[in-house]
Length: 178
Image (cartoon, rainbow, N blue to C red; front, side, top):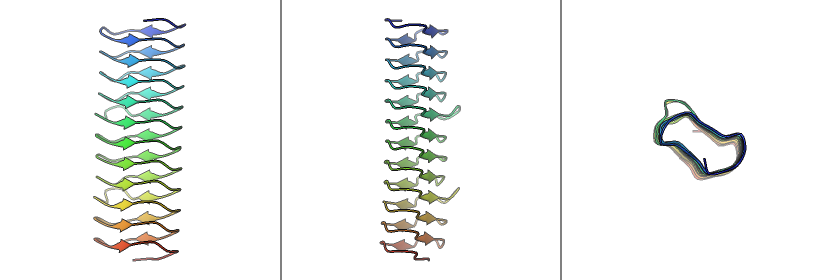
């Protein structure tokens, strides 16, 4: 423990550089700074922020507030933002708020209230998008309220577009359905 106040390490090889109220309870976990961050996954890392949790093995949170990497997930990353969650191996939420990856190899670049449950799914940004559970290798780049319920499909942007047929494409627009 490098400094700070009320920090606790309960497992060997771990580091808390500073800040307050941090807990590291896993082998070689690291918290650099901030307030009330928790690392309970081996080799987990939190850079800073407040109330962040890394419970998965080799998880990384750069900063922000109320971000969570769930238990059992490996090599997951949250860059920052607020109230983001990763519950999939090798998945990334770069930033934004209230974004959630619920499958492996999934990516959300940013935005607000996006939900990605697709294997290898990508949501670039925007607001209130969804890639449904087990729909593989689909992408939504931006816009508002777009949804994919199919494999290998794409929505470029626009609002309220919905793809529910495999290998389909909507460039943009409003309220289109395939």
